[in-house]
Length: 368
Image 1 (spheres, rainbow, N blue to C red):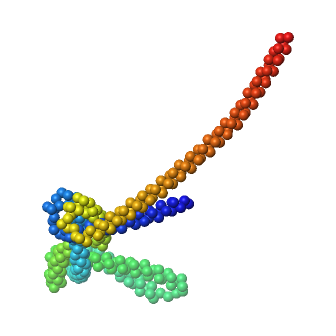
Image 2: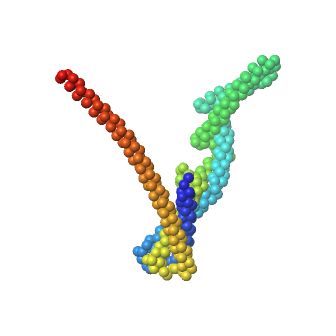
Image 3: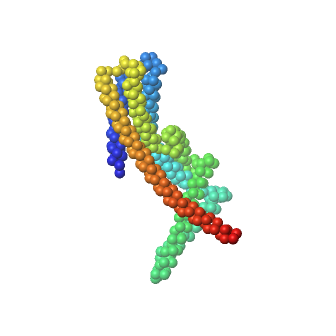
């Protein structure tokens, strides 16, 4: 590999290092100037100047971050409130389930009493035949289970016995559940028909009390769930508070990354004649050393750039020279080919002359 290419690479790396060092100087200067400007509004002083435009961009970035932090705080507050809300909802749901269970038991007791009263009063209620069928089925399965329990025998008998008992237990369980549901429905029917006081005044009063309690709990639950929905709506249907906060934090990081570019622009502007005059009221004595170092680095960059250009120019000259040598060789080769061709042509011309002389001799012979 040409050593000059290695030298160019080294110079480019040093040049890039100087460029980065110079940028850091201007970034630091720009940041210092913006800190000195602070929260004041020197737009009247800066007017519609370049520095005024840079300051406006800086204020915009500051506002984006401030707004993002407010959004994060709001999300965190909403999430904390939601975490406090969830146990309240769970407690109310558990209370509602407990009241529903007790009310169901009350309805079952009233339903049983209601159907017993129907039987004694010989009133033809369609629920009564259903009760009779279920009680008969339950009694049948309980009797069958007792018989199977007492049944003895070998392995095959034992396997068959277990299979039959499993079927009977399933039928019995379903029948008991159906009877429970029938009694509950009958109890609700008795309450609706105004028969509760007649059947059992104390239980009927408890049913009224439990229904009122359920209505109150339902209202409270509706309010709590509406409040929870409000929080979920603020988080977004396809997001969570953590994801929303993470997204905002990424946005803040992106915006913070843009500050460096604003600092750099203001630092470069401060190094210009017109820009330095615009920012003169914010410049300090120590800034001069920064500008001197930046100027020195600019000289180093220019020197390395010139060195790179000279090396590349020398390489270009060498390439052109090599191309010239190549073409000279090609010309020489072609001339050699021409010289060889001329020898061949001369031979052909001699042969033609000899052939023409011979033809003349033969013509002379014919004419004689």
